[in-house]
Length: 250
Figure 1 (cartoon, helix red, strand yellow):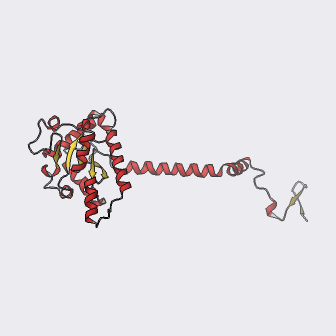
Figure 2 (tube, rainbow, N blue to C red):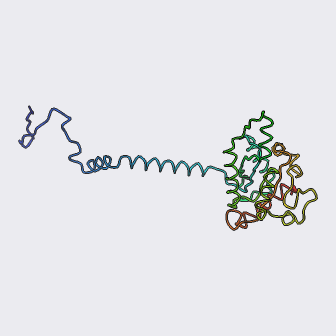
Figure 3 (tube, rainbow, N blue to C red):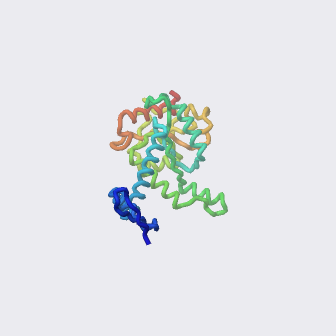
């Protein structure tokens, strides 16, 4: 039974002993709106907040990444360990003739594709009692990804295994830039009109990270594309300077 009390003005008020029966939202339009919104849009709100937090995280991570001065791409059967990639990056940073973007830090972006040619797959089988150790599906995907990347014009300087270089020259020869156009003449020690063996470049003997690559590794350059980073004259000029530095030491 409810207890009756008197207000100072003499009117009765009723106090309910069961607090659960009190509706705290009944006197607040804001609380009622929030209660209704949460009931109907709870999962929409949670998912939206998650996406916003994820975007903020990704943007903040990218903002902290070093800005690349130039890009060098490797494709061949050599599998880089993480520390080997960093060693190669540091070597290329030392070779880089100048800080192209002027931000006070030289940074070479390295793109890697690990692909085994048919000859290398056969050699792998022979070395392992007739059982190949290479994941053939992954190997095919790496070649597909490399072909796509090569077509996008996002890189001009390529370090390739001999097999991959011959593949590019056979199927994508129109992309290659002659050494004579880059250096003024084709060097006497050139592999052919487009490429030089990495071991025949001045820095090879000075940089252990370059020496880890197979002896037949070649370096070549593509002509500027009509799309991608290489279509930008300034970016392509930086790639030219990087290539010249690697193959001439200047």
